[in-house]
Image (cartoon, rainbow over all chains, first blue to last red):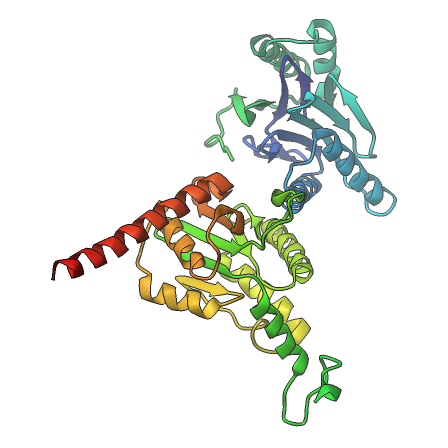
Length: 204
Length: 223
């Protein structure tokens, strides 16, 4: 029931993810941040097995940092996406990671970009993408309303429309969402959308 | 004696490990490096051998980042330094991954010392480490250390930078071309100073020195 989706706008990329941590029929918490700030200009929204999700994304994060120290410049979003896919592919036939990832980044030379990477190491560069049952609703919504070069206000409005659809149409809909954006000024949290207040909002 | 220096695992009859002593010599011949700790700033400085005209001086870096909050300046064989730096960088990230906390300076120092000790099995430059307010290594490190012992006082910000540069100038021909300086602060992390900045500070120091000389001479003339 995890919902993760995102899109590319005019000079930025935006990601939204639900914030419920679920085990069987129990909701552990509803303020779990599933969008990791990978480095200054990259975001990773991950859904799937909670242990794998954290383990895998932190592993990618530390390797991206190591590259930067070794080489003096950060990895591009495309390079990071390919590295991530490579790690998933290597693990696939022995010990697969059950994690789906939307990677959003901003590069000075190429602008904003969004990559769809699923748990069996599919890699696609996309303008909009989504994972989970929520994707049936958010992708349809985005297909209807998305156009290239959307402004931040338009994009946030579209994200809110998607969240509305998920909340009203998905049988066990997650109540709360976190929205993060990445643009030339870096990756940062944009807003939370909470319909159930569960504890303080945890920002990194 | 030459028969006992072929391998690191061979002791000479009088108990020397020549390979280790040769390694120490290599460090002593290496370019001077100095570090000074201020109240809010840490400054690392390294002597830069005059670079060839066609060489891009920025590609020859003796002060490197191990992590956002840790920098390292080295003297000795650069190739060896590169190996150690690479291992240290990996350890910094590995530590962050396993304990969700950045390494402390002590931890990574201990780690590097451990690496070095594994290769040479004994004392400096491998095995012992300690915390200093200011220290120097490499060529003429003794004179630099003497200077620091005489002139060290708690400084902050630009004063710390000046102290480090003054210490290096004891053994290095003056000029931004021959010195590499990096400054680490809490807010800005590690910042390498540009040649022009270094030249400007060196000029300041020379002016202060000249003023001090003049002041010393002037009273003598009166009497």
